Image (cartoon, rainbow, N blue to C red; front, top):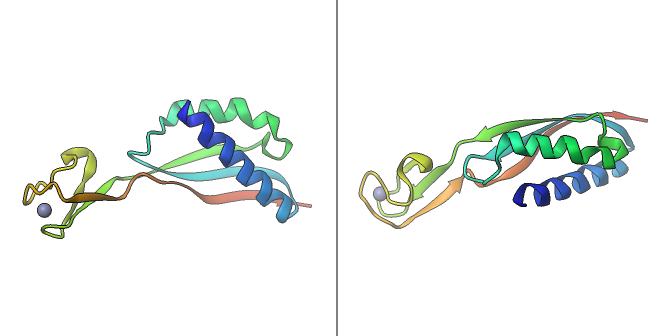
Length: 116
Ligand SMILES: [Zn+2]
């Protein structure tokens, strides 16, 4: 499952950060998730709640997701547009020469933590 892989790497990243910074308890984790990253938000939070108990530092954590809208750039007319609404073809010039500039990411924005 796609979500589980992301959760495992997220948990490992947080675990490492906690060790480096002498964090004993992580409260809130704000994760920015791209609109087309393929992360189903409800399922993702459920997976997190199930998985976090394996990491003592994360057992009280709450995962908050912030969605980043997907934006595509057209290299023919140099405009940007909403990916989800128009897909791969530019709505202005109908060029297929487009690429996603944001909306596929999964980034830790903020961690609330208690240190020793
Ligand atoms: Zn265009």
